[in-house]
Image (cartoon, rainbow, N blue to C red; front, top):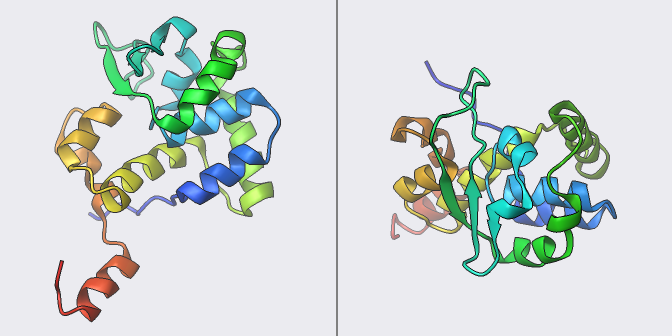
Length: 178
C-alpha cells in the first residue's frame, strides 16, 4: 500500500513564515519544526537548558512514542542550524519552554500557513519538509537524516526520498547524467 506523499514547504516559504510574524514564539515554532525537524511534542517540551550554544547542539530529552507516552532514557542530539543560532540567542531564555498547549501551537501554525501561504498545512508538515529538504536539496544521506529526525528504522523515512518530478525531469533531459 502506498502512503500519500506529505505536503512540504520550501526553505523560502519557511523564511517567509518567520518574517511574517513579530511573535518570537511563532518564529521558534516554525524554526524548530523546519530547520531542526522536531516533532510538536519535542518542541513543546524543549527547555533553555536543552540548548547548548557553545557546542551548537540541541538535546531532545522529551520525546514521546506514537501513543504519546514518554520514551525512556532516550536523548537525541541534533546540531543547531545556523538560522536558529540567532533566534536562540534572542529568544530561548525568555520564550522557552512554551507555556501554550500543543493544540494552541498547532493552531498558530495552521492559521499562519493558511493566511501567508494560502495552504492547509499542519505543524508536522514542517518536519516532513525538513527531512525532504535534507535529502533532496542538501544531499544528506538518508541514514543521517534518520538519526537527525530520531526515527528507529530506515523504512520510516522513505517518504522523504520520494521522487521530485522536477529533479527527475532534469536527470531524464540531461541523458541520465548525475
